[in-house]
Image (cartoon, rainbow, N blue to C red):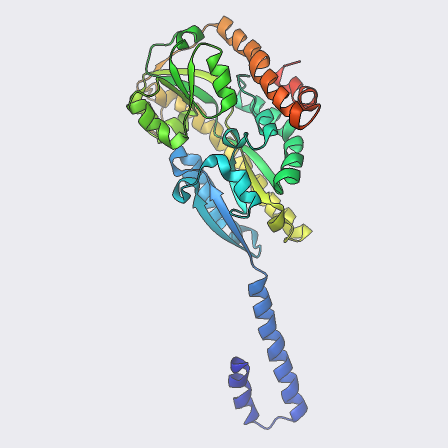
Length: 364
């Protein structure tokens, strides 16, 4: 009340009636309470973003979005953003840490967190070799199922999905077809992709993204799978010679927010936040496609390469019969193993995926 006294005392020296003084004091008290309430009603949101090493989408698109989110939306929120690599935590623990209240909002790495929620793999099933547009359609089709389970199991809501771009193969050794992978050690991000790669005789090694450059440099692996942009940004391409443009995955990731923070917003505020994410995610998809298109020129050192380092990798387009075989293996291995695991947790999960996403992926 010191502030009120400082204001009221000078007023008291003026000729003001007692009732009027009481009215003035009451108004000042209401103003002070209003300011205090406004400060208390600000929602603090702890955000974990993608690792800086994953490249442009993380550093030039995602981070500026969160930096300007409060200003752009006008919402009573305070964003505390940190990239995953600055926190020193494993990307495989994002969902449990959100449930425990460590983070409020995450740029969720799907493959890495699929061990915690099995349906995540259904958004980007390994081996389908889909284009970015097809991958986008499949992920959107299956999203309601994933969102339902995440809300029930981890108390988080999906705000939307986006893509790093096709997860492709980069190798030190000459590769002309899939059978050439036999005996080679290949870095993968998760178990399902590892099983798929092993079906071609390769030795799968699950290695964190930030440790892959050293693994290539030191000869611990012969090949590695990631998006072209991320592989370039992380320095992988200094240690490989061959680029095999097979889309083992579409590189789908998600934004998720805890229901605890989401429910602090009014319905109108929720709509405002969702609209902001919808716009951002649409931008992420468009930029991802542009980056992928440009990377085709940059990887092989063509003059059309823009705003990126040029490499002189040898592009290898595997035979059409191998591409057909890839699709068959996607159903025989990836879908089979994933659906068996999913059915154990959610009976009928595999059949549900075939009904919802199968037509998009051309799998029956």
